[in-house]
Length: 211
Image (cartoon, rainbow, N blue to C red; front, side):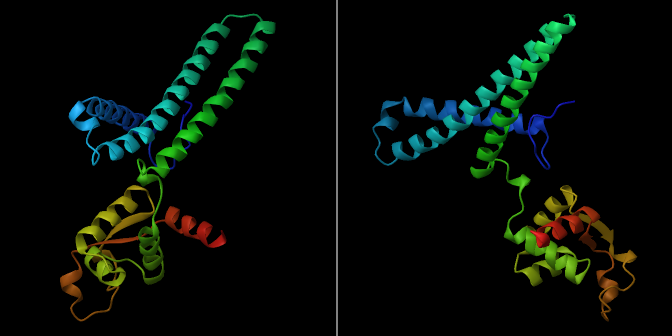
């Protein structure tokens, strides 16, 4: 199976789904700007026009990628059953279109990152601080992590779950930690869900340190 986007966490289906939502938003903005009461409003029009420009850029790249993918598919279909000489020519053309697909997909992927549509593909400074803290201090749960990192418990829990979903953290039950914190009130913390850096997370941090 050929993957279109060289993504870290999100699959092609999810990225195409978000591109579909971007196209819907572009059409919505176009309709808004076509309304006289909106297009003549000096407070609303500049913001919508700027948004439309960014959405158009993404949609144009997405349409270009779709054309390249379709052309490559058509060439592959046409190459079936051809003689050796023709097959070699079609294979060369298919490879040319494969290069075009990779180039367009890479450009589109970078633009989606820059505009914040696929934030899951990156870790921000707070995510890195969480990973580094847990790697240094050992397994932690949301409330105590929030105190140490300076986050409220809701955000700490949300970030822990996202890092868990990316495979950079793993869950471990408090009862499995063998009195990890050595606190007198340890028993009341045993039922918390703790998070520790996974093997993938350790490799990730190692790569960051080397870089």
